[in-house]
Image (cartoon, rainbow, N blue to C red; front, side):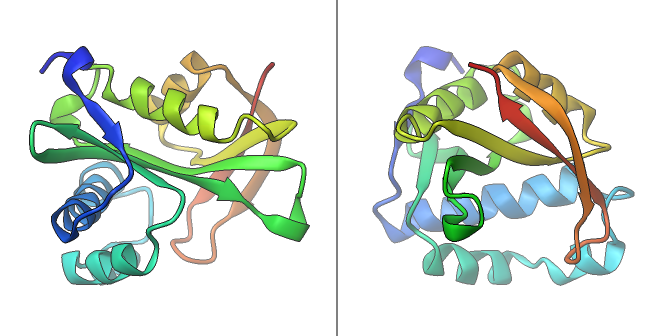
Amino acid sequence: MHGSEFIIKKPETDEEIRGKAFVFWRSWHEAYPGIVSQAYLDSLTLESCEEKAFRQTEGILIAKDGERVIGFVSFGDRGEEKPEFGEIFCLYVLSEYYGTGAGQKLMEAALNELKNYPKICLWVLKENGRAIRFYQKCGFVLCGEEAVSANHGATEIRMVLKR
């Protein structure tokens, strides 16, 4: 597991899309019990994650270690709602790859894709200290905005890239 060996690319094959879905599914079940509603977690099956992954293939980059998908980032914008903002929608890396540089490479690639936006933001679960510290290391700062997600019942806080 050497960071320089990770390949960052758009998902092109069914296997890569399924790998991205697995990363999403496992990340939620590892990181969020006790933070988001258990009912929401229970509804998050690998099958439902795969269905969603095959519907949403735009604005996604995956990280691969050899043939294995070990992380992904999703990015884009909110359109009319906040046209000046590019947004990191989510970034997940399998827990055994924490601290390997995979997340950093995914973030750098996504920020490069969003470089034409005057501002870049993201939302993160308020109780996810590890993610908040990672985003701070990437140059994001808390901006004081928070909201409770209708989906999973947890509080999210907004962070903005300091440039």
